[in-house]
Image 1 (tube, rainbow, N blue to C red):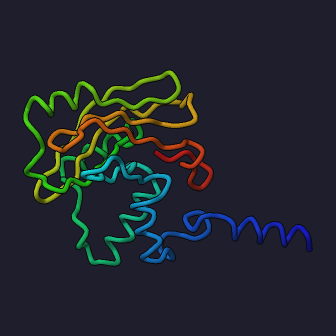
Image 2 (cartoon, rainbow, N blue to C red):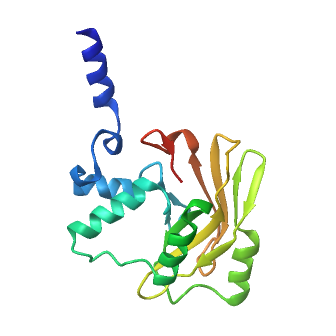
Length: 188
C-alpha cells in the first residue's frame, strides 16, 4: 500500500501537461500553457510582451489542440516559417512573440539592430540570432531563430533581445532549464 500511495501522490503532484495527454487538457490549461508556463513568459512593460518557445513540444501540442477545438480559428503560421521548421526543427530553437501591430515592425535600421544584438545565452555560451520571420497581417507573430545547442551549460536560457518598433526595445526573457522538462526531455 505505501508504494501505491506514493505513486498516486507523485501522479497528483505532476503538472497537468505531465499528468494527462493534450486532448484531455481543459481550455484554461491550454491558455495557461500558452501564456504563463515554463515555456511562455511576459517581458517588460508598456507594452508587456509575451514570449514563448515555439519549438517546445508542449507549446506545439497546446496550439495543435487549440486549432482542433476552435476549428482552425487560430491563425496558421506563415507558410515560409512552417516549411523552414519542417526542414530544420532539430537544429533550431524558435522564440515567438505575438506582435500587437504587425504593420509597425520598426525601421530597417532597428531590424538590423535586432539581427545584430539578439542572442541566446546559457552559462558562458552565447548563440547569435540566425534568422527571423517578421510579423505580418495573416500571422502577427515575430519568430526569432537561434541554433539549437547540443548541450546547455547553465541553469537557465536567457534571450537578450532588441525588438524593433516597440517602446523599451531592449528586453530579456529567461527560462529555467529544469522547468522545461516535458515527458522526461528538455523541450525548447
